[in-house]
Image (cartoon, rainbow, N blue to C red; front, side, top):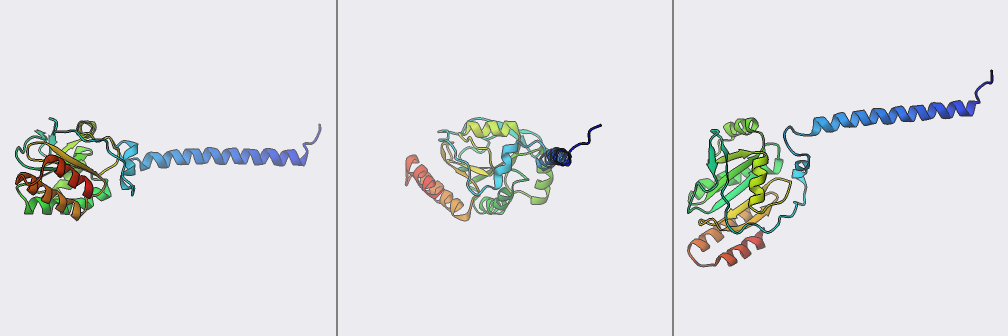
Length: 215
């Protein structure tokens, strides 16, 4: 019986080792990816901490009608606050920049009850309710998953990262969209624009231009 050549034996063993390593890495990576993906959250939402927010298309002209469940589990319309300028903030419990915004939004709601902050959580209901119990929101929270994305699309937003915010006048006219984390200057700009618009010092076009220039 012919003996195998040493070079061929070495090559065969090396190939087997490489194939075995690749198979192991494939199984290992699949396990890691599965564990890293949050439950009930689209994979693309994992980009929420990206430094550059995704662009938004032109927002709708006026606030569309849609309803989502509130913290009590009851359907609530986005038009539940007629006459009040709205800041509609889309967020989630797993989104770090979203959570950084909340104290500022609570302060805005506390200092300006004539404006209405509305939080829309694109998240599972249980973690939102638990988080809300600790956070003690002073503004309403609506909750949805696919329904909340549909609401965002109706508002003219086609992005898949959080947070993003819609600004609307008291009559439901949409004034602008901000994608990415809010900062104090954004809230101050909205306050000033809402006041000037209500006092008829500026037109809707001017209000939109001012918000776009600061966002």
